[in-house]
Length: 275
Image 1 (cartoon, rainbow, N blue to C red):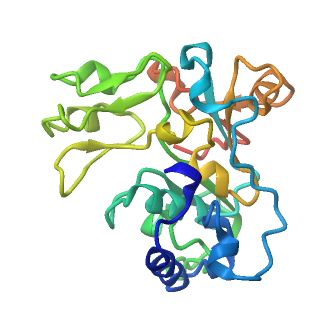
Image 2: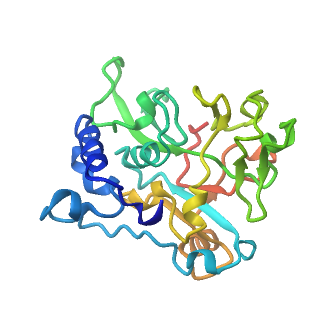
């Protein structure tokens, strides 16, 4: 979507109404990538700098094969606000009950027991504590989940018609015109990031906003994250933030490393409780 602008005032009003009906009204400006001044008049703009463009990337003028993209999630920064999930829902019109990306809440009590939940995929945020636990919670943290864009994707290997494929620029995509809805890829994915669309009956998943990246734009969820917990960039650009993080101090890891999929999604501050 060029410029991430709504096409009509009617669509703007409908979107604002949907946001305000939830519990993230305070994040309204964060989930409108551009044109917030047109929607809200003279309302103040967010103080947090939310870049739209991928640094060093200018869209269709460059060769995608020359880049190696990576995604980093810093769970020490994630506050569970749900802005990323809302932006994804809006960008792709994801049906209710299904999620291309979601945020899990982890709670740990003083006995070492771990409780994990993700009501409505984290779309509504986590302002309210769980009322079904009669224990004292020692620690709480949030973990965003999305496609891992594996170098050796299990989903590609099992697709009988080649509908799921790895593009020359390293993105795992789904050709909905070819997909027969067999769900083999859904079963094969070790990260449970795929689902069968209830209307099209074809496989769907997070694409790291491939259509935006091709234009030199950040994925929608990265663009709206108010704490910069989600980071995206080109590892071949040594000056990029993701390259500096991966080559710098600190420990980054991937989920289910023993599966041998070699994900391009890295986690900073990942806890051993995360599955």
